[in-house]
Image (cartoon, rainbow, N blue to C red; front, side):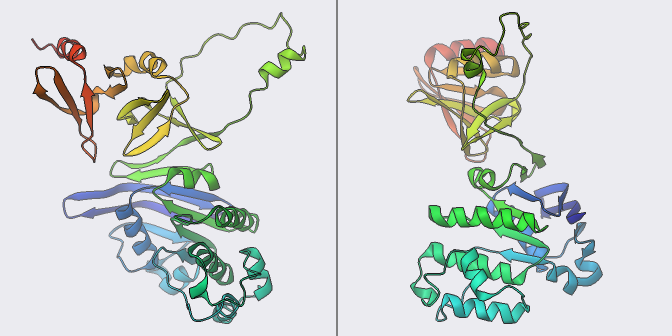
Length: 350
């Protein structure tokens, strides 16, 4: 059953596309993350809270849209926002007592304190708690609310490691209880810490990222143990177009056209995509060979650039050149003197 169903939702700001039509479903017991910028997150949150009208498309929670029954729609949603406030003069226990009464929750106060690991801080005023502990009070508030769909905005921003563990454990518990979870974040690492179902949403639309769990390579161990016979037929090489990157213990696959440029620093190749940096599992030389058929150019000993993303070639001196990209930050990539001649030849210039 789909707890959240977004159908052909789109938003424009005058002549600017905030996001084109997209559709998304989250089922019971499922967590998904949408990786996007602050503006898009604010628009989505406003739509969920009913403070911004939906002109095109629809959002349904348990088959109810705000247009059908706004009160019932909002009752099915619990939203954790970075701008949420707390009753800071009350203790953590008193806050939970208030939430329990407000939402008519069957969860005991003790259960709520244990779930977010605030047992020892139960009698402290919230204003004396650390920033991370205050985040846990917010998580507890949503437990007492107990909606069908939990929405978190940047839930682990600036929090300590222990609170991150509390949050991950909380999400798993919610999924086990058949809840739907939507995480809105600008940090891909945060998204991947919680779920393998990650989307990117922006002016080009919604795109699901290919995410694989990184598993230890046991081939060498098996061979060492004599489990692989010498007669095992050789596997024919397969052309693989995706470019793998490593984020925590997961591998994220990107299509070559998504990449803006690649930089090598201290022996590590880093792939830049829409302002985000992803460590590559390949060397710069290996990436050069793999990406050359897709219009990538080794413009400098430390850089590879996607020529489709180049907007300008700037000449500073006879020996100093720069490539300016058409990404949001107008990235400047060095172009070495020898490569300038090669680039001109590729472009058919004299």
